[in-house]
Amino acid sequence: MTIFSLEVGQVLSGDVHVANGRRLFSSGHVITEQTLRVLKIWGVQNVPLHGEAKKNAAASSGETRAVVACSTSPSVQLLYRGSSMTSFPVSCLFQESKKLAEECVEPCEGFFSYLYTPSIPELKVFTSEDCVLNIDKAGLGSYYSSFPKEFFVFTRMLNDVYVTTEAVVEAVESDEKVKNKLLLICESLVHVSNCRVKTVNACTAFLGNRTVLYLAIMLVYIHHVQENFNSNVIMHYGRAAMTTGIAARYIASAVGVYGRECFFSSGALRDIGYLFYSRTQSAIYEKVRQKVINDGHDLCAVEEKYMGKNHADVGAYILKILGFPTSMEKTVEEHHTEFNTSATKESAVMHVAECIAKALTFNPVYDVPPPTVDVAAWRMLHISEANLTELVRMIYLKSKEITRLAYGE
Image 1 (cartoon, rainbow, N blue to C red):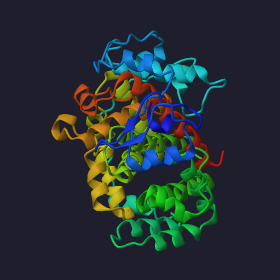
Image 2: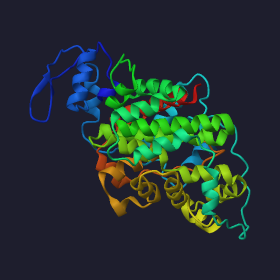
Image 3: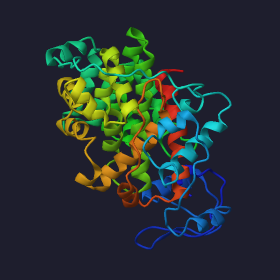
Image 4: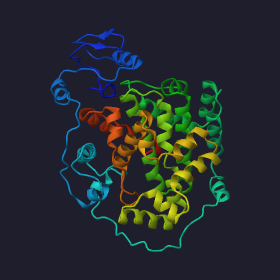
């Protein structure tokens, strides 16, 4: 079992060792809060538990087996249009999503809503060839000119390679609303049961300065939107962005890739251009979305034809004018590049995180069908079916809780 699923009181069914052979805990050890802290410090990802042996044995072959999806509802057909419903891991992801959705007593806003949609919205044919929109860069800047000053204080700190923890703490504590939510979110993100995070300094110790800054930026943005727009579409994409960042962070941790701060921020910001189009050019962009759904064309190609620029290019430019680090601009600009082009473990993490997050937050009213999982990326991460179950469940639960805290719901 992965360590972020452990609970105090569970019993180890085998010894736990670290890479150098040192034994941390023996079989029969009862999990305590101290155990969880030690496992986290040593970077242990999985431990044997009583009651798990049988399930782990079934998945021990490490092979990706076929999992047949059991539903052919119109919503699911739309969700996985063009992909095989009987191939792993797409159908396996669907199974996990469906299982979690069915456990909800009430339909979850922003999560699995496609399973509760009584009918697919009518899709209008998009035939106009004369609605190309050329994005005005000056106009882009003016759109963000009303953002609170705290937003830009935090982005400037991201660019300061010498920024100190003390400076980050002081900046966050100057906004009481952001500070209070940040403490609760940090407490939810850390992997130690019953851990209380009482100070911003503790947040930086657990998450790192940059993750704290990115979370603060997102909270300032959410507050700004709630007070000035109260827009369902922005709230929806905010949930999706948060889920992607959390998914990337947990997957990176599960497969042993370092730099989880970068994964969270990359996931949270990658579709900022999509959000911009949906918010500011809603009428034209709805036609673009329908074109993608009706004809099954690539989203970026349709955007370039009818909008002038794809959302990845627009997103990169938005980050530039908002003062985000150059490295983040590049990440957003290239996030629709084929996996085969980079084929790194880091890009595999981001690819799988996006697929999982978009499946969890998919809503046919706002979204185009999410991407299917690239088999090469999947194999590179060595995630078994058993691990996928726990990952999807943890990402879902954490994203739902953190979104609730961020939105003050």
